[in-house]
Length: 310
Image (cartoon, rainbow, N blue to C red; front, side, top):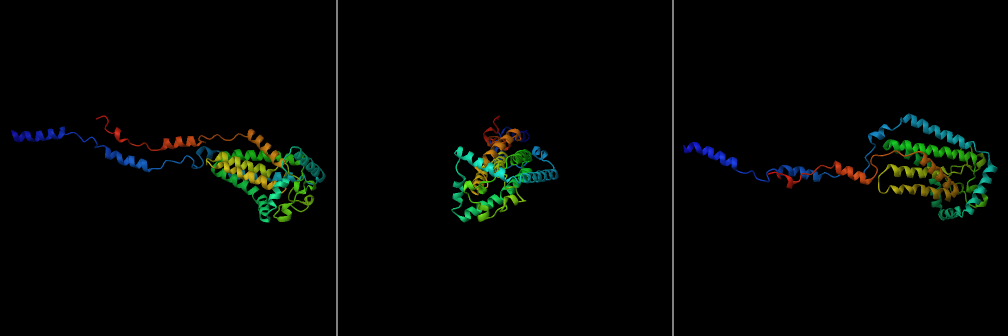
């Protein structure tokens, strides 16, 4: 009788033995360690183009034809303003007088700084001749590849500003300060090189030297900075404004433009930005990025909650 009851008693004792309270914790520990080991996403990192951005990307061939066509029309339109030498110099004297009436700083102050060093003035001429167009093209290419929606916005703004500038060049031919005797400035391109203009403006068939106002050098540079600030998330993106600032000092210091040329270009850009609205982005701030990062982070297991119902 006792031999038959011993197995039952052993089973009863085994069944009544309580389970250790921490038995489930080791299973949760590896998941908690894995969660801590995974880095949280950086909200300022470039996530690349989103699906809605990619859908907004226009066909490449059409964009190439459009941009090249606009550039050809602009160059042809600028050349239509050639041969108006007397009018261009009369307007230059008016602009020079307006600047003195407005008490704007003299362009000669900037040029005097450059002329202290042959190397410095040569660098300024090189910047004027080589950075303007390639920087704008690189800006548009990057937007097309990485921020298609912003590319469409920026291209429309640049096209509008350029069209308005062409009208200004035709309606108000203007000789640059380097050609105006009253300004007393040096044509740094001709003296120190390099230059993109011929020595005789009236005979220059490659460029219209009487299209100083507004300054597309400055207008495009300012739009490049604004576009990159709008399309990126870095805390240092405001440094892109150094590009238009340096461009302004270069165009004035080399006597290719007046201060008023840059002011008019800025006004035209402001109008274009008011007319062409930028794309709406679902996440544009670091705060929203941090919220997404926390939402995507894995949920950690809390040991103190394991077995709380026991």
